[in-house]
Amino acid sequence: MAMPTAICIGIEPLRMAGWTTQIQQRPDIAVHQRRPHYKIAPYNVFPMPAVWMREVSEGLSIPPERGMMPALRPAWALADMVKREGWGGCGLDADDLDWDNLSQEEWSDLRHACGVLSVDFDLEFSQACELAENWELDTPAP
Image (cartoon, rainbow, N blue to C red; front, side):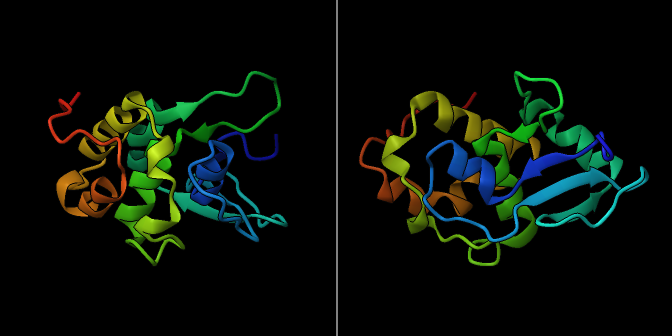
């Protein structure tokens, strides 16, 4: 409530969705850089520009209960991490994710998130496609 623009980003949305078993010591939270924000344990707080907040707004998962923090859907969190930090730099490599558990809808959401966030899906996720046994290369882009 002290930071109403806060959004859970990074590895935590992936872990909550079952895409990875990796656990961050300090979950990442993005806040609007021009709004009040504070350092708060145990989170890493990242002030983000208004343009970023607008770009990811389509990828938000709104919590069912009042007072809970919105989070990026896992596809959007992953595309954002890869764009900002790259594989490895974000704390994950492609083989850290359970690609076989992704539904076709989640693959489509990842492709769409990459399009909105200007991430080259074919370049960044080619290894993921190879690791996923259920991936169909002719899956249409959204």
